Image 1 (cartoon, rainbow, N blue to C red):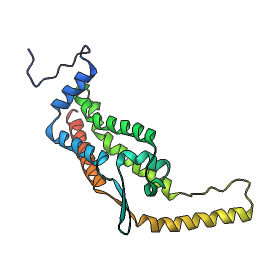
Image 2 (tube, one colour; image 1 turned 60 degrees about the vertical axis):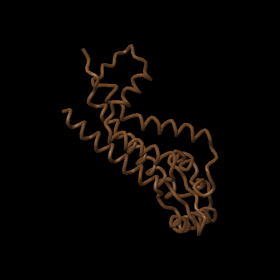
Image 3 (cartoon, rainbow, N blue to C red; image 1 turned 90 degrees about the vertical axis):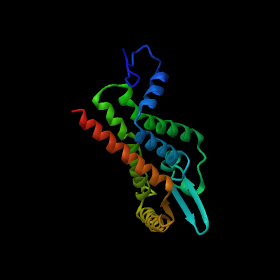
Image 4 (cartoon, rainbow, N blue to C red; image 1 turned 180 degrees about the horizontal axis):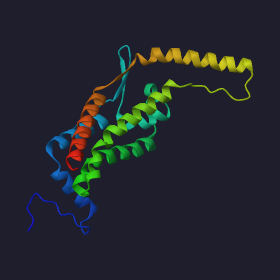
Length: 195
């Protein structure tokens, strides 16, 4: 006889039923953290670009378009396909904390790390993409061409420091970072308890 709180997930149950049941049995702090991630990633600006009184916000699920072309921070996001694909990756990371309720393995608790790993990866890729050289020197470039490209890269990098002063982390970035860090710590704690 089963108790109402126990989970006997047999293969005959449809996947949607398993996911719904896992979401229902998730502990309350994890539910709150996932809700905060949803708000921080999809509804509040993660990065804010401001020039005087003008402000433009970029939400986290637009980050793949910004990584592909960092100038989209300033001119807006217009790539629907990138938004949809990266939005699905975000949803997958939000569902990862449900794994311990679906798959009864100790390693499933590492799913709690998925949102934080995604945010760190996006931040690292965006940083490396914007801190490198904008213009690459062709292998057959002469000294004049090479000097001109180095001058252009120096000019862009100096201007990048000025531009960076106008970009800040928005409320969505802070909210999502706190929620994902909470989930990561919670998942690691549960992972260690299962030893």
